[in-house]
Length: 211
Image 1 (cartoon, rainbow, N blue to C red):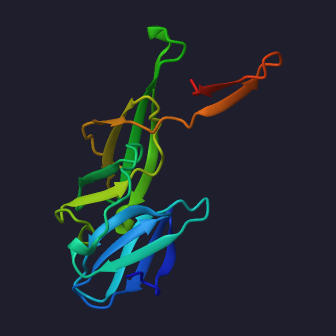
Image 2: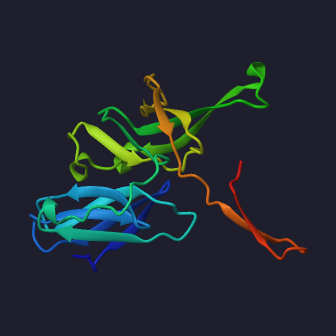
């Protein structure tokens, strides 16, 4: 059942709070952003519900909340999504003022070993008060989870590294271990080229893939 009373409130830093009312406290809710699964199953043991999530605020987005009586009623996805937007999870830290998510990738340059360079960037910094509440997630209460805020480069398969650091009110940052993720995207759509032989009138077909 599609919820038709969804209220969206921006919180800044690319986050919004999604509020809605379900038919009963036992209902299981699932949230989709632009048709992609974001959170679920979510049961707050109350009909008035709210979840704070990161969204693509630089463009138009659609949020849908679907309510189901039981988890068996939830339909299965038509296809498996590529491994280019992994779920990032970390342990909740009571003294954290914010959480900083780092991403690292190795660029090989022109192919020479000495030409390669490791690039590290900050994917997101989420204030602790706006982090997805553990009760909204299908995980232990000590864990927080978000989807990767960018689409990873995954053509032909590629390794990426992540780490999540907690930052306290004085700006001190933790030192956590790096976690590797293998990103694999769908192959590019091929181009069909058709040519006609001017002498014979025969057609030739070629399927071209991007390099």
